Image (cartoon, rainbow, N blue to C red; front, top):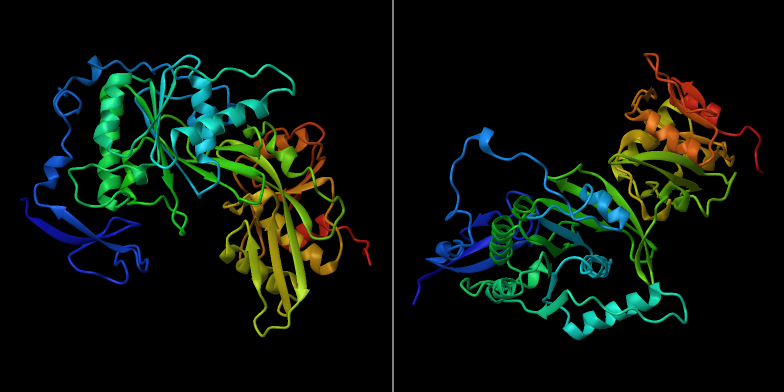
Amino acid sequence: MAKTQTRYICQNCGRTAPQQLGRCPQCGSWGSMVEEIIAAPARSASAPTAGRGLSTRSQPRPLAAIEGDAEARMPLSIGEFSRVLGGGIVPGSIILVGGDPGIGKSTLLLQMAMELAAEHRVLYVSGEESERQIKMRAVRLVRAAQDEGAEPKPLPEELLLVTETNLEAILEHVDQVGPDILIVDSIQTVYLPQLESAAGSVTQVRESASRLRELAKSEGLSVFVIGHVTKEGMIAGPRVLEHIVDTVLYLEGDRYQTFRLLRSVKNRFGPTSEVGVFEMRESGMVEVPNPSEAFLAERLVNAPGSAIAVTMEGTRPLLVEVQGLTSPSTLGNPRRTPNGIDANRLLMLAAVLTRRVGLPLADQDVFVNVVGGMRIGEPAADLAVAAAVAASLKDVPVRADAVLIGEVGLSGELRWVSQMHARLREAAKLGFTAAIVPRWTRKPEAWPEGMQVIPARSLREALNLALVKESRG
């Protein structure tokens, strides 16, 4: 019998320790160290099988002798999904799709599988749902997408389903079926029988992902892996899992909102930080070709505390509504409550508005909300956030025809942001005729036609230009 040993591994970062620790010394998370019982010869268990791994077939070759032409991608009719992947699916790639439970990961990949099965063979491996459950969802999606009274479309013959969690059995199914695309739902349910740890543990997740990567590279098979997200917002398992795969996608959004954002945080075959926008409907995940218009559809024009920001998601500019609300506080320390922006950013902007602009926010609770479940991480939205808070405090609206773009510094100055022309073109496309931006230091290119660009050097000057003078009281 193989000699066993015990170690403790952090579920968040993969740090190992010889004894139990309440707090991980590397990432600082509490209660994340879990016990792992491993066999002494377990290292050989992760070695690739003969004929499948790269180690048995690799040969050093001169760089000049290697073919450098890009492989043809598998096209997708789901335009938002194709955008995030960089133009389609690259053969031989392994893609990790993460997200909160119930956010729509399985639905989106099932839709993709049914579409691709018209021209490719797809193997869908589920470790959480039965084949009957997946069949019922597929039938529902097909019927909801059809017109009422139309003849139901047949399900694709080249989409094969199997319920399996043993990775060795999954690899045998791949050998027998010979699919072009493999979908594993989810990586936390898959296990290798050679390892004594339970499915979903750090060791099992890491070793299973490594075997799937070797399969993708050696056989030219495209592999999609679904991963759960922890309460901290990270994909369950060690961070090394993100280094194993070629592409990491996050499906984000509030479960109680209709919009979902598919965000690329890593992509070896395309740009990172791209985002695709979907709407959850009865027919599944429906792409939103013009997300800016969708985010502004329910906006109340001339409402106090509402401003329009233009944020960049990868190469795509998006217009979002930022709402601010101030209310007299009954607490010793007034609250600063953000939804969709960084909390520290809101604290800084509130301090700048108080010290540099002279707004009395010391006794006011401040709330900021980004409409539609969007989350803004770049400082280009600073001016819009500050204008929304100031407009709510003064009970006046922000100019309805203007967008606000600019970073706010601690001295109250406005700073230039990148890709200004792309932001202004998107604003002009949606009918906005004015933009309040930081004063430029060098002569810019020609502005979009019909767009009045108003420069401001400081936050105080920008607020004087943005806020409507007449009170709504």
